[in-house]
Length: 250
Image 1 (cartoon, one colour):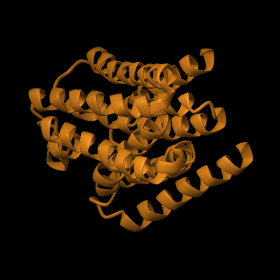
Image 2 (cartoon, rainbow, N blue to C red):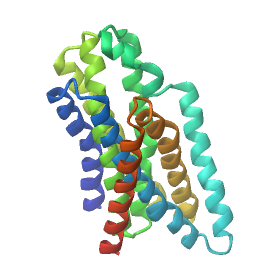
Image 3 (tube, rainbow, N blue to C red):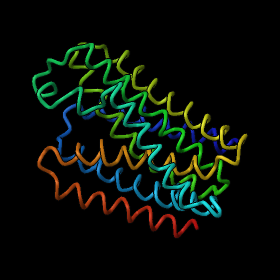
Image 4 (cartoon, rainbow, N blue to C red):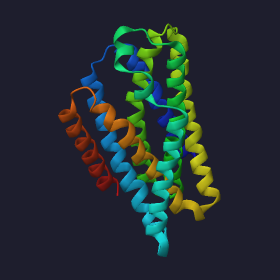
């Protein structure tokens, strides 16, 4: 339990760490942020497949394949519904807002709320990983999500400061988005611990949410500013780094 709590704090703290970087590099180039986000996407892709989807097949028994497929689509549909209710980053704060520093405060606050809401299923994914009792795989999943949270924390800062929010309040908002992730991690862990029968579905569901985030949010964002080639290789590097990590810890 101590390890789960520390991991939850680490996953949530990654957003806060990213926001601190955002204060230092308020005008980081799109190319830099795209490369970092693509690397994180590769890490998350490997974590979703190796740490969630394949274990779901293993734990599912006779109906493992069916449970895994249904779980993946259930996770994706869940995030799709969330996206319809609360649009995410690229739909709320576009390049023109950042370039001209004229972002509307209500839009920016909705943008931050959207990040917080999206962080909940990501936290649940980290917690579900620990429910499988495979600590090394769970840490890989959490590490992938934490890496993705760093650039996400970075992009919160610029739009909020441009909208006139004070640095202190900006930092508090960034910290709250990380707190949501901590809560999600604990929810995922306790849910699976209390009802181990749902573990195969929960693993696949968490994997589906991560695949959806990668495909719908991260890859389009990293390919929108002319850095497609570098972003693609960064994703491959991130994926291979997690492959190596999985072999070393396995």
